[in-house]
Structure formats: structure tokens, C-alpha cells
Image (spheres, rainbow, N blue to C red):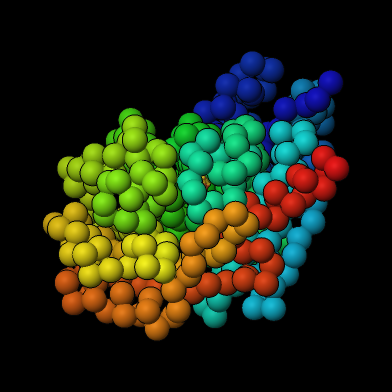
Length: 343
Ligand code: SF4
């Protein structure tokens, strides 16, 4: 019988488990310490639990880590790892080292329901939600685990479409009994699911990134079918009314498609739409994927767009393109592995 993983459980879940199997009240905290503050990989190594307690735990539970199945490394040091999840699916995790920080980009679902035109993961369709164990395993089992300084939830899947497991993983990352990370080291990126936005903003303190890509409704609908049921204007209203203060940051992701969403009219409408929100716009050059005819603008055109936004009073930055030689577009590597497995 397959055992349930302990890694990825919150303190309340551990308390419920220890009560149920008859361990003393304090053992939940001891187990959390072994899971999130030490680098062991088996229940047997939890040496401040009695042998009997470890045997009772092991009869139903395993520690629950799994190593990546394979990886590709870019000439710029970026690595893309492939993890097997949900028995036979693949997800991607990117490790992006920079001078003073090292970021990982984690997935929250295998495939995705959202069907964004420019995204390879969307073309895979939805294959399942990841558990908090599978989300956090991408972090803990990464060979570069000890170097990681920041986490972005921008890999495969829509985080708010798997909100409970995502919130659990965030609780583990930021709680004292967990990794005790500052929420300012974590960013969750979403297309903006209206009915989940408030819960996400209230129940977490991490940075928020919203995929915008154009300020015009009809253009966004063409790029992102989610716009039909979750208009970005409603998402922005929720953010505007949430009264976000302090160090929490809101950003809008904007993939630039040459000749499509990079005109002066877009600048004007963006400044109208984002007026009054403390935010920044993150400009991203499009990574080409098969079957999509959009082109990426040159870096000079991207800089010009950034400067025009800045002139309008919108803080805009350009995200460096990393790992272009290792299938950087999200979902490309796992799609290839999926096709290999099927053939
Ligand atoms: S961009 Fe994100 S939300 Fe859209 S299809 Fe891809 S993974 Fe899903």
C-alpha cells in the first residue's frame, strides 16, 4: 500500500496525525522540525522520537521526497528540472542563478486549464493538481536547495486554480515552525481568478503578479480565454480595494508581442487602467513556441516601451531572458517528455 507523505503537511495536519495515532502532543512540533529545519529524508532519522513512535509513524507515512527525473542546463547557468508527479505526469521546475540571488520557478499543476494562446503548458490541457508535497518537493529536492533565495510560483499551472494546496505550501514556507522565510522572497503569479483573489490576498502575505499582457479586453480575450469569465478589470478592482500596504508588492506581467501589444495606444490605456495602484509592470520578451506566429520584439524596442511607461509614471522593468537554449518557454520540456513517453 502506498504510504502518505509527511513532507508538505502543515502543523495542524501533523497535530491531527499525532493525536490520531496516539503520540504525545509535543511530537507534532518535533516532526515539523525534522521536516522543515533539517535535511534528513526518512522517518527513521527523526531520532528524538522514540523507536515506537517512529514505527507507528512509518506504518502509515513516509518522509515523501523524490528527486528530479532529469534536467537540462543552459549556457547561462539556468537549469530546468523535470519531476514526475501524479504517478505518470511531468512538471518543470526552473533554477535561475544570478549574481546575488538564486530563484526557483515552481509548478502548481500538471498541465493547465487556462489555455493561454502563447503557452505550451496550456496546450497540454489539464492533467491534475499538485499536492503541497509535490509543490514543495520541487524546492527541497532540487540539488541546489541550499542556494535558493527566492521562489516564484510561475511554472506550469494556474496557482489560484489549486489555491488550497498553494496556500498550504506558502504557510509551510513562511511559518516559524516551517522554513520561516520572509513572504517578500516569494511571488505567486496568476491570470486572475476573480472568486479566489480575495481569499488569496487575505490568507497569504507573499507578492502577487498578475498576467495582464494587454490593457484591451478584446485583445486579452484573444490571448487568454480566462478573460471571458474573469475580466482583468474586476481583478484590478479587487487589488485596488484590498488596500495593499507595506512590503507586499503587486506587479503586472506583460509579454511583448511585436506589433500586437506594443503601441502608444497600449501605453495610454495601461496608465489609465493601473492608475492609483502601487505596482510595477514586468516586461517579458516572448519565447517562441511551435504553432504560434507571434514574434518577439528586439531588445531596443522593449527598452523603448519601458521608457515610455516610465514617462507615464508607471514603474516598468524588463525581465532578463534566461535559458533560451534549453527550451525556456514554460511547458516545452515536459511536452517533449510526454510525447516521448507516449510514443
Ligand atoms: S500561462 Fe499560466 S495560466 Fe496560462 S496556460 Fe500557461 S500555465 Fe496556464
